[in-house]
Image (tube, rainbow, N blue to C red; front, side):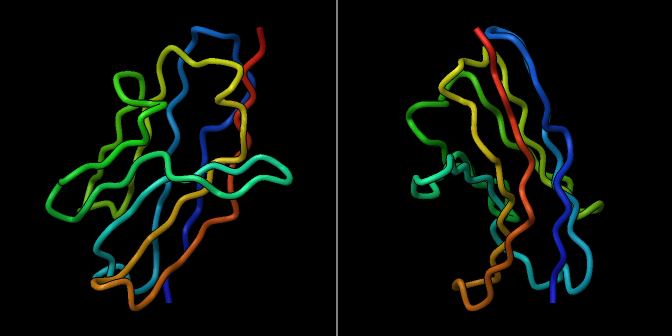
Length: 117
């Protein structure tokens, strides 16, 4: 089992920055890919960014150039640096951890990000 705890969400104005953190605990050795997804009420959860244990990254087109995902394997923590935030970035951001080949998938509770105009 893996437990994920997110932090760092909040209310900011358009153009400002936030940094999200997601700390994993439990059977962290099994984790391969970690990532961030976001979901507005009534909408499907969508990928924001992912990072593998080796550091390979993947971003949604809507956040490329503005968001940066990073990972500290020693701390079992993944970060999402969000710059130049826009009102359309307002969502609940959830952390995901996946074992190799996707055999096990774990989700955090989510953290609210609200960007005002």
